[in-house]
Length: 250
Ligand SMILES: NC(=O)c1ccc[n+]([C@@H]2O[C@H](COP(=O)([O-])OP(=O)(O)OC[C@H]3O[C@@H](n4cnc5c(N)ncnc54)[C@H](OP(=O)(O)O)[C@@H]3O)[C@@H](O)[C@H]2O)c1
Image (cartoon, rainbow, N blue to C red; front, side, top):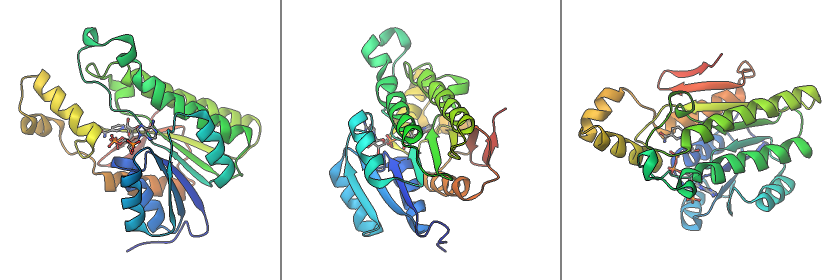
């Protein structure tokens, strides 16, 4: 049953065309928010608009482009900003990476969080705004087949905490939170990683998934991000996200 806690509010979700971002955009839209979805794939964004209706505004842009970040923040001034966009890493052992492939998630994921959080602080967005960034459980556990992915995701966690400290220091009232989801095969990025890790360990994918245990669905991620936005009790910098929910990271 849809709830309407976000009626009259506006959200921007980066990487809204598929995976977690699509599910997050859907959950926020069903809670009554106008949702601006940013991604590069116009057809997928249009498909989401066909599902969600006119309250979903597709914006085709590279989320790592600082001009796009500035223009979209200026134009829409969101009360919720979900920085979810992320590149799929090249899945190989570290010595099979070049510097360019190793650093892909720095160029996309970290750069985009840097530009958008900077815009949020400089404008600044309104008091009470929620800025949520998608880090990863890999930021804690590492991800040896994903080049610089785990380090990039750890940096997103740090950047989000730094932004929260600046918001507190300047009394801006913007809540910054990073979320570190557990690996799931339920998205393109996650499915590719599961296949690569299974093959590296000489296992079939089904056996690898058995060992991994219960995993998140994109819909669970969308629902949990909505809960995080609505409940002011989530006041920590960073949370692990597993199928049992959010757990603060000390
Ligand atoms: N799946 C997992 O197991 C897992 C676990 C922990 C953390 N995460 C993180 O959660 C986030 C979402 O992951 P996912 O699994 O949903 O990945 P996904 O299915 O591969 O989707 C990635 C999304 O990011 C968008 N994107 C990529 N580069 C972009 C760019 N330069 N500009 C704008 N949009 C861009 C893609 O849209 P376009 O291609 O249309 O631009 C797509 O909508 C990522 O940050 C990922 O690192 C995922």
